[in-house]
Amino acid sequence: MQTRSISNEWRKITSIVASGMVIFWVPVAALAEANWTQLATANSPTNVHHDATYDSANQRIVLCGRRDTGGGPQGQAECYFFSLAGGWQAGPAINSPGGSDIEVAYDPNRAVTVLYTVTNTVPLVFELVGNVWTQRSFATTPVVCGDGALMRYDSLRQRTVLVGATNLGATANSETWLWDGTNWTQAAGSPPGAAGGSMTFDEARGVMVLLPYYATNTWTFDGTTWTSHQTTHVPTSAVWVAKMAYDAVNELAIEFGGEPASGPYPTNTWAWNGSDWQMLATTNYPPDTLDMAMLWFPPMNSIVMHGGWGPGDGWAWRNSVWVFSNAPALSTPEGVTASDGAYDDKVAVAWRSVDGATGYRVYRSESNDTALAGVLGASATTNYDDTSATDRTRYYYWVKATNATGVSGFSVSDSGYAMPIGPIIEANGVAGEITVNYPDTVTITVEMNASTYAGVDVDWWVVAFDHSGEWYYLDSAPQWQKALFSGDLTVFQPVYQGALFDLSSTPVLSGFILPRGTYNFWFAIDYPMDGVLNLDGPILCANVTVVVQ
Image 1 (cartoon, rainbow, N blue to C red):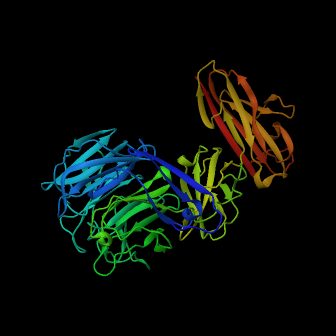
Image 2 (cartoon, rainbow, N blue to C red; image 1 turned 135 degrees about the horizontal axis):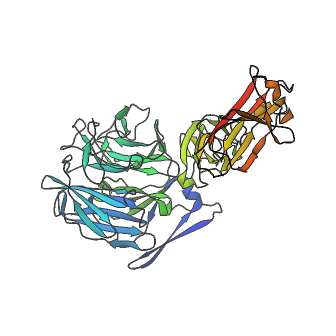
Image 3 (cartoon, rainbow, N blue to C red; image 1 turned 180 degrees about the horizontal axis):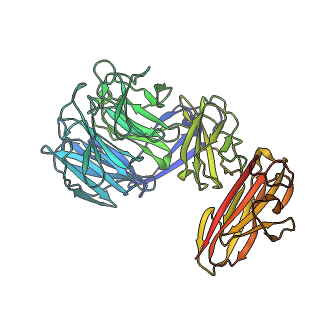
């Protein structure tokens, strides 16, 4: 590890392993530079054609592979676990003797690790729950891919996605299959040469990202359709058996390694931002490596890469562990504000600009918890209008800054809500119509959001009608008065005359027992302020119907 001359804080990471305690120190400054760091771990397994995934229920890496008996993967499938607390430990047996590559993916919706392999040209599926592997049966047989299969979990559609082919090659026909825990379903179409490529699920954009065998283009899968992208940059084109993993800090797909068609083996680290690839400037990186296992490891907030092989050490299978840490590319947005009832049709969200940002993502949840926050939309400016907000629902909003190299962390949240201008009138908290059983009580409330019309002088009216033919109005006392109405609106008096202002929910009839029948209540605001109910002039009106049965 390169020594820095500047003063840095150091971070201690401790791992308990079978042979004792292993301590490795990582300088915080190095992590901020998007770098690889080799970890000293005891009892690291040596497997071939292996794969790994993160079991979030047990906070551990699940790594599965086979031994190399010469010329490829042979022998019993093996399982190992890795955690920060326990280091490497042998896992339970898998009943899959001899055969092919192993692919694993964790399904957090069902809390199981899914394993795909092929034995004697028969595709097999095993699932790990706790410490027990169980072979699963299925009615529909997926692709038979003994070498170069790719499998990752689509968290948006809650399906495990398998891509493979019966043979390798840049033009080989591949197939895409979806596992729901019970059966396989084939998706329409699949990128040529997918087997032997690299793939990961892009959580931020909700698509699978795939680089095929000797790729010159990039493919994305939205759960139904594969789309080809001819990008400006391609990660060290003409490689295969590289690996890709999703960096949840910067919301980027990270690619490393692979075997080229010719020339030196690549040691560059590439990032996919949804539209193009960018090579990251890393001063420390693993040796030329292919066919390794690579995954996002939340306990370290980093990508972990295990094993593989390459020409640098005479093609010996490795058991080294490397960590790729990529600190947020941008500062966190500050000054996030969300409007509180200022608009009837939206919540206006605003924030201060972030140096280096080219855009921003806005997140929303009804709970003040980023784990439950969903992407609401994107903005190229420092404001966003949430026009999908339901009236009078309070929401929490967060913002992340973005650019070509990644995203920032979550901002501090602010809550906001949309408020209809009104007037609003409700019976027992319900607008429109309500049915009650006699002798249940009825409470009528009125509410007003003045919005941009605050201060305008208007007449305020509250009027009621029962279907026996009686009319009532609320006078300025305020008291309910019977009106001898025969078509002359002057019999009604306003409850208030004056400036339009915000009125919180206020009872105008509280806990009253109405006789059986049907009743209509109106709350109206009209202009100009002249004491006359102008039905043919500028008027805002709302009503509620109460049926007493």
